[in-house]
Image (cartoon, rainbow, N blue to C red; front, side):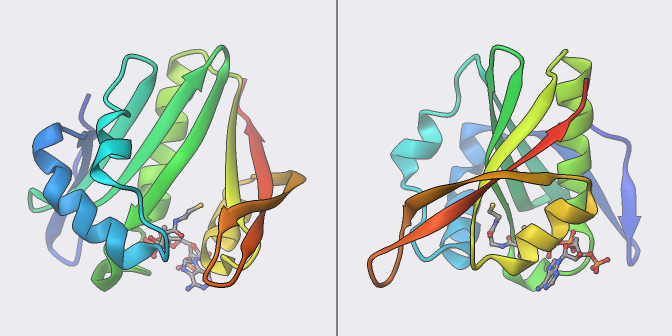
Length: 158
Ligand SMILES: CC(C)(COP(=O)(O)OP(=O)(O)OC[C@H]1O[C@@H](n2cnc3c(N)ncnc32)[C@H](O)[C@@H]1OP(=O)(O)O)[C@@H](O)C(=O)NCCC(=O)NCCS
């Protein structure tokens, strides 16, 4: 499925399905975004029937992506990342709204995610789209020193 085109500063943005061919571009963005990036193998394992993998493109170049796993009626957002040079231009919000709309269309009843306690940009984004914190997973993520806990956030979409 591809989204209607959305123009930002004269450039056209679109969300489409992510392909294995996009992996090099995705890994580059992933390494910019995270202290502990996913490996190529983790991404490859997401090209699976219960997963939805989305690419955000600008003039056909991949500038962000999202990975969602469908489990029964729950869409679990596993990864959402935008290339650093495109931050604060509405890319993540656009991608997030797309994956929520798609999950709703596929009869999911809520979107669930984990986010590092320190990840203020992402928490601000999720709060602004209506997500609420429903719990904490202690020591969930590897960190530069030790481990870091995660907020569990959810959005009811049924
Ligand atoms: C979090 C992330 C995806 C946001 O991407 P983005 O494309 O810059 O976000 P958007 O431009 O769509 O911003 C949407 C809203 O998020 C919030 N936001 C984004 N960056 C922010 C920042 N640095 N500080 C505070 N709020 C921020 C704001 O509410 C913003 O709306 P506004 O610009 O109208 O104020 C991006 O910073 C990123 O890729 N980070 C690394 C990967 C990551 O942490 N992913 C989330 C894992 S759970």
